[in-house]
Length: 324
Ligand code: AMP
Ligand code: MN
Ligand code: MN
Image (cartoon, rainbow, N blue to C red; front, side, top):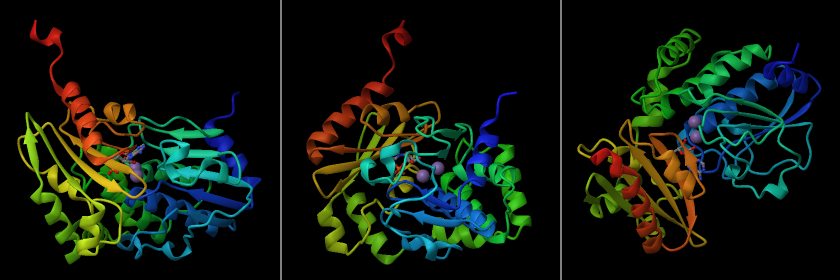
């Protein structure tokens, strides 16, 4: 009988002592939650684990159990290299040639995942990577204790923006219920990761809200390096402004353009159910989900805005057949 993917992962783990785990740059709650849940469960099984994020753990997630163990340097060697919540090998932000070995295991839920590892545990239907890990951790004979449950819950809550996305299924809610039974403090995680904002974030949002534009069902704005400097915002992201824009009525797609150092712009798309933005993001070298996608594109703000808005308009306007 053919060895299943889980059996292969189990065999790879049993041969390994030093495990390196990576997730994507500008990590969200699912990236951090998946990284920490898997790290803690492996550590409790006696493995030597190095959880690595290019920019470390964002302050919003530093309360999570195990966050203090994350480093921003990859060990120069290890027995196993695992990626979580990472659609492709470039997404960690580390130059691929600096990775200590070929990817061994890839655990993810992005439809744009490129199956880049030896062992790929990818389920596009899962609402979060931590939803997959809830099944995979026990299948690997590892334990879900209260700390692991807290991290798994963080991925579920943040990737579904508090169970508000179409990706939420009865299974998602069933897992959330199990995690609460295991002691995960849902209300606290909700409040810390989704509700609380710093004063500086609100000022940064103000910069973007001042520049809102809307045309034919597309709403967009931009944030610049100068905006971050002026308000003193230390991240390089949008402080989640895109998810606030997504609550504004009457749009098919909302977009945010975030200027990055080194002549790049990070673009985030959010869309109404039925409008697929993952494909547009993919065409710009990014990826994501049907209703939430992103890409980092080289070039200046004005030029990228024009290119991206043109592609987005094209993708939401009805095709000629629909007029027939
Ligand atoms: P964001 O717009 O950064 O909040 O991301 C929305 C979704 O798209 C998340 O699932 C991200 O992991 C994914 N995503 C964002 N940027 C990229 C990228 N450059 N490549 C692949 N997936 C991305
Ligand atoms: Mn993510
Ligand atoms: Mn995710």
